[in-house]
Length: 139
Image (cartoon, rainbow, N blue to C red; front, side, top):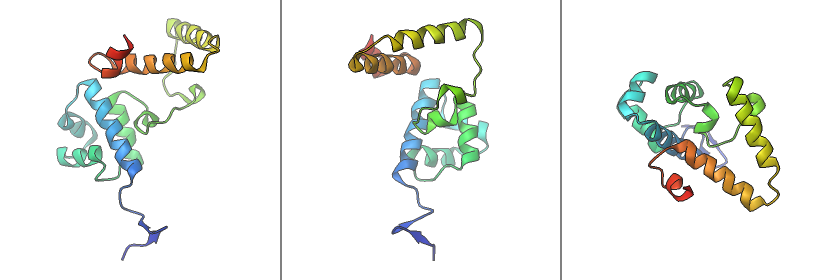
């Protein structure tokens, strides 16, 4: 019999696992990959990858890192959490750094919280790329 913590089987997928699966699916689709393509890149079957995306199976940390790499993103992006820039794994150089500084300065100059949120939502929509409902609404 499995040990239970707080009335929940500690090996069963949770709602957090389902949210990670949804995020993986969103990013995979936005990048234009099929489940099979990512599954092959990370060394699992298409069926196993499908279980990750539906939240039927928990994703191990090492596998989450492999999925993030295959999708060209950071593992925290798959979990739907923001990682402070000081911990970002992608170094920025040259014009990208200048653009980021300009963006941060512009954001800092916005005093209205609604406008700050609008800018964040716009940036997220643009990052998702063409075809996103959010990107269309933001334009």
